[in-house]
Image (cartoon, rainbow, N blue to C red; front, side, top):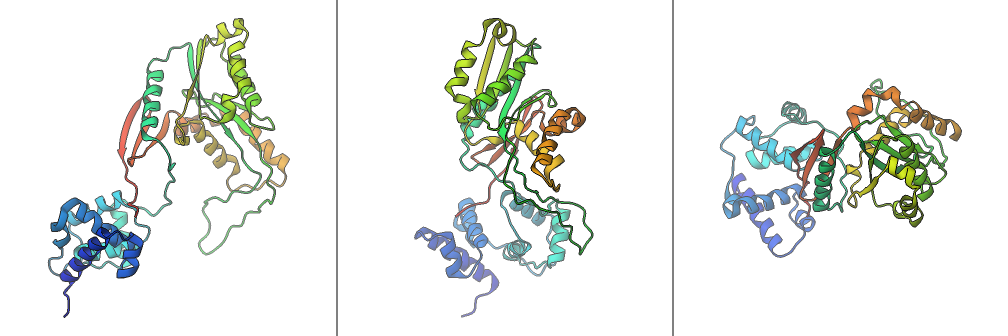
Length: 359
């Protein structure tokens, strides 16, 4: 007995769901039936959204060379919600759903026209707590909305660039290679830094041998000394052990009253949720530094490497317009349910985002 195209698709979808019901993993179903993992996932999504009718429904209605406007809209929605890592996967999707074959070049043209580009995915913290991150955003928003002229807010973090050449993208003649010399050393520069959330060139860095409670104490002392008019300074950091160190906490409590009263009548430490580097504005400063003076640049000696890093922060004012675009209240919140919330100036904007379906 020979199956026509419609019957074969329906048979595959129903067989997938029967195997899922029996507890087989997506990988086993894919291998057993000789279909792609994406096909298995699509059948499951179809059933979850449309039930049995969805398994039996077939979009193909006669010979057609190109997708209609409505079909393109459906394809756009699918590609926004689920990650396809190759044109072959999308070709299979289109053929399965609508019985239309696109060449690879034709499909690339279609994808570009629909607004898609082929680029690297972004890694999200897998253990981020959506509720904790949302609470932090709420608290931080309250701080910003109530900010007075005699208050400031700083984000703190450590960074440890290694003396090793970092490859980067660049405009290179087609068919040629552009080699960059590499270092074999593993020495690193330890930086303990703070950035003013509202003035991104207001940066403090302690370049001690180790990032610990002592270097954090030195860093906070710099902030205090340079902010004699501030009555409240908010310090926002992750939960690194040295921020909780007894020596640092005791120093904060026992700081000479005349300095404490004038400079920080209330020095409040606000903790970032676990696994939330995306919420720390200074992470963007570290990334900006890497792009400016580390990526694609060879430093023959460790001393030259270290000097370049120190020089960057000593002359941070030269980049006054650039870091402002990169870090001033422009952070991303990764929510576990697959949504992104973007913090722009003082407003929150929610952007829909869904992770690829996993087996």
